[in-house]
Image: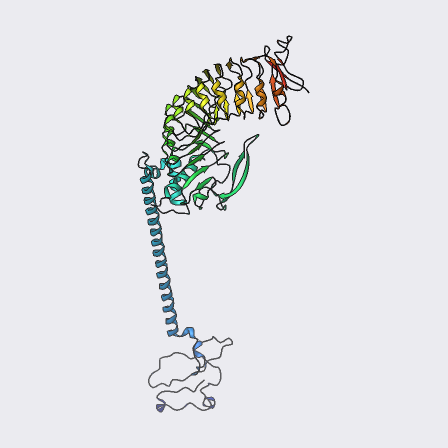
Length: 557
C-alpha cells in the first residue's frame, strides 16, 4: 500500500521508527482493521494495515487503468444511440411499407370489385337489350337468390364471373355465347352429355367429340378433336358447333349425345342459326313454336326423341325452313293448315308419330317439296288431289295410316316422283292410267289396301321400276307380258289377289342374280286343294301363295 499521510503532523512527535517498519506505515505485531473513530483536531490519524483475505473480492474499479486501452464498442454511448436510432428507423419503414401494401391491396381489391361490378352491369345491360321483347327480366333472375340454380342465372353467372374469355359487353358475340351457355345448362340439369362437357379440375379445353355415323343395329360413332363446352375456347370450337366466317354460330349438330331435357325456346334467339340437328337424343316436351320466327333457319332435324303434343302452327311461319324432320317422336294432333305458308319446304318428315286427321290440301302450295314421309301415323281421309301440283316431289310415303278413297289421277303429273309407298291403308278403286306416266318411278308399294283393278300394259312405261308390290289386294285379270320389258325389276309381289293365267315367260327370263330376286305370285294350291291361280314355270317364282288361306311358301330350287 502507498504510505499514508497524516495531517497536522507538525504538532505531534513522530512515531518511533521501531514501531514503523521501514517507514512503510505497517504496524508491528498483530494487524488490526482500521477503526472509524472521530478524531480531535489534536489527535493524529494513522493509516492501519488491513489483513489480506484468502479469497479477495474482485473490485472492477481496482483494475489498473490503461490510458491507451479502448472500451468495447457496445459500451460506447454514441454507438448505442446510433443502433437504437437505426432500429426505430427500420421499424418506421416497415410500418410504412405495410400500410402502403395494405392500402394498395385495398385499392386493388376495390378496383377489382369495381371492375367486376361494372362488367356485371354492362353484361346484364347487353343481355337485356337483346331480350327486351322476350318478357324475361334477366337481371332480376340473376340477382334473386331464389333463381340462382336456374339455367338462366347459371349461364349469366358463368358469363360474368367464370368465363375466362371475358367477351366485352357490347360485343355482337356476347349474346351468342350466353345462349350457348344457357343451352348447355338447360339440357344438363339431369345428366351430362356423352362428350365434350365442361372442364373439371385440371382438365384443359380440349376434348374428343363423338360423331354419330351409324344407327343400325346400334349407334356407332367416329371421333374428332374439339373444345369443351363452357371452356375458355371460342364457342365456335365447342363440340358440335359450326360457325361462319364472322364467328357467328350457324349450325348446332349434337347427334346421339344422350341429351335429356326440353328444347329451350331461347335457341330461337340465335340470330344467324341455320341448322338445328339434335337427332337420337332424349328431348321431351313440346316443340317450340318460336323456331318459326328464326330468320335464317333452313334445317330442323329433331327425329328420334320424345317430343309430344301438337305440331305448332307457328313453326310454318318460317319463310326459310327447307327441311323439317320429326320422325320417331310421340307427336299427336293434326297437320296445321299453316303448312302451306312454308313455301320453301323441300323435305317434311312426320313418320312414326301419332298424328291424326286429314292431310291438308294446303300441301299443294309447297311447290319445292321433294320428300314427304308421313307413314306410320293415324291420318285418315282421302289423299288430296293437290299432290298433283308438286312437280318436284320425289318421295311420297303415306303407308300404314287409315287413308280412304281412290288414288287421285292428278298424281300422274308428279313427273319427278320416284318412290310411292301407300301400302296398309283403306284405299280402294282402280289404279289410274295416269300413274303409268310416272317415268321416273322406281318403287311402287300398294300392298294390303283394297284396290280392285287390273295391271295395265302401260306399266312398261315405268322403265326404271325396281320394286313393285301389290299383294293382298283385289287385282284381277292376267299379268301383262309387257312387264318383261322392265329390266330394272328386282322385287315383284303379286300374291293374294285374283290374278289368273300363266306367269309371262318374258318376266321369268328376268329372274337371276342380276335381275329379279323375289317373284311372289298365287302359284300355290287354291284353298289348300284347288289348282293354282297362276301357273308359274319351274324356277321362276320364288314364293307361291294361297289367296284364300292367305299364306305363302318359299319355293326351293
